[in-house]
Image (cartoon, rainbow, N blue to C red; front, top):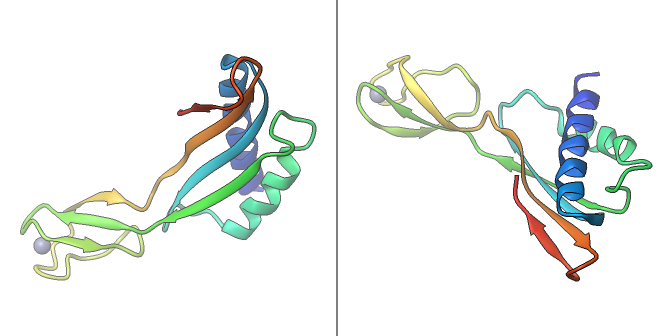
Length: 124
Ligand SMILES: [Zn+2]
């Protein structure tokens, strides 16, 4: 399952970051998923619940944020919302545009519990 490997990847990254910070556990993980990143959110949520077992993230609060698609047309410069990867500029119908947002799949932030401080924030 596609979402399972994504979930394991996210948890691995989070654990590495937590170990680097010498954290005892991961407090929360904020995940950003683009509107057309090709990820089924419900499947990912389920996969994450499985992937955190016996890891530093076992008790972590996982929040998934959907990032709306946005693009800028290279011909007329219009910025427009993009709900799928392939579209036409609504103004000039150009196919040449740059995706600004909507295809991301990343960890926005991780909060870990460390020994030295009561709480530390690690960005990856
Ligand atoms: Zn245009």
